[in-house]
Image 1 (cartoon, rainbow, N blue to C red):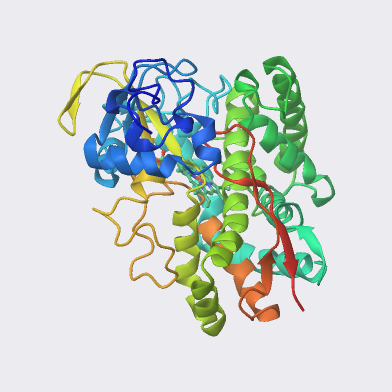
Image 2: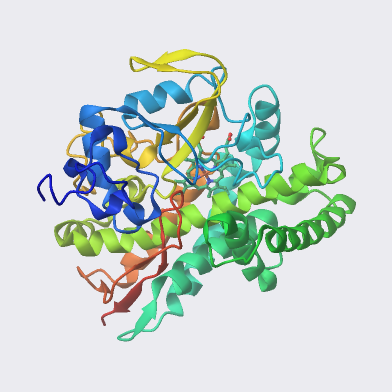
Length: 431
Ligand code: HEM
C-alpha cells in the first residue's frame, strides 16, 4: 500500500488498525487494544514492531478504554511487576478496561500489599504441593473417564468434550462442589469474564450479569455454612471456612464473591484455553508432534511451552501511583500501564527463537504467561498438573503423530482482548 491509498499516511482517521499491516501505521497511531487484531493473530506483527521501535508505547486514541501505555518487552514487564508500590493493581483494576474482572468487587488479584498478601496466604494451602499430590489421583481418574468417553473416527468439539469438561470437573474437586452441578461453574466463569459493555453475547447487560453472580454467591454461601458445620476437609471452601483469617468471609459478601470469581475464572478459562491451544500447536507443528509421540517423557517441557505459546491471559494492567520513569519514558501519576504478556513471551531478547514452538526447550519455564512477582499465578502448578496428566493419559491411548487431528477452523473466543482461547475446536481421533 502506498501513501495515497493508506488512510493513516493520508491523515485520515483509522477505523481499525487491524485493516493495515504493522509497518503502514504511523508509530504514534498504533493501538493494539483492538479485539480484531487478537482474533486474527495480526497483533503479533504489531508487538514485533513495538518491541523493536517503541517498547514502552503510549496510545492516546483508544475510544473504548482511554489512553494507555503498552509495555511489550519481557524485562520491562518484570520491572513493572516487581514494583507494586509504584504500579498498583488496586487503584483501578487489573485489566485495560477499568475494573472489569473486579466487577466492582474486591478480589486479591486486584489488591496491593499488605491486604493482598494476607488473603493470598489464606487460599494458598489449597494449591500447596502436598494438596496437589492428593488431588492428582482424582484428576487422573477424571481425565481417564473423559478420554475413555471420546468418540473415535468421528468429528467432535475438543473445547466442549475435553477442555471445558476437565477444567470444570477439576474446579469442582478443588472447591468440593457437587459434580452434578459443575456446569454452573462454567456458566459463572463465562458470565464473570464477559464484558456486556463491549458487546459480549454471553450476558445482555451489566444488571443481568450481577443477577447471575448473586446466584453464584447464594450457592457458595450455603455450601460454606455446610462445610463450616462439618469436620475440616481438604477442599478450598472447607479450608476457608475453618481458617482463622477467613472464617468470617461470608459476612463480607462482595469480597467473598470477588475471591470466588477469581478462582472460578482463573481456574477455568486459562487452563481450558491451553488444553485446546496445545492440540492446535501440535497440529500446526507436526515435527514437534512426532517428537512428543516418540518421547512421551517430553510432556514435562511440552506443557510449559504450550502455556507460553498460548499465553491465555494476554495482559494485566497496573496504575501508576506516582510520577516515575520506565524504559526511558516519563510515566505520570494515574497513568494506565498495560503489560502485554503475549508480547513478552515472543521477545527475542529474553527467549531464544520465540516464534517457534519447541517442545524440548532447555528452560521452558523462563516465560511470563503466569506473570511475575507477588501476583504470580497462584494456580500455576495446578494448571501444569492438569495439562501434564491430560497429555500423559492421551499419549498412552493415541501415540501416533496427528492421531488427534484438527479437522476444521478453530473459533476464537468472543470479543475478548484479555482471554486468548477458543470456543470451538473441531477434532477427530483417528483409530
Ligand atoms: C493470577 C495466568 C491458571 C488462580 C494470575 C495472573 C496470570 C495468571 C497472568 C496474574 C499475574 C500477575 O498479575 O502478575 C494463568 C494461566 C493459567 C492460570 C496462564 C493456566 C494456564 C490458574 C488456575 C488457578 C489460578 C488453575 C486456580 C484455580 C490464580 C489466582 C491469581 C492468579 C488466585 C491471583 C494471584 C495473586 O494476585 O496473588 N494467573 N493462571 N490460575 N491466578 Fe492464574
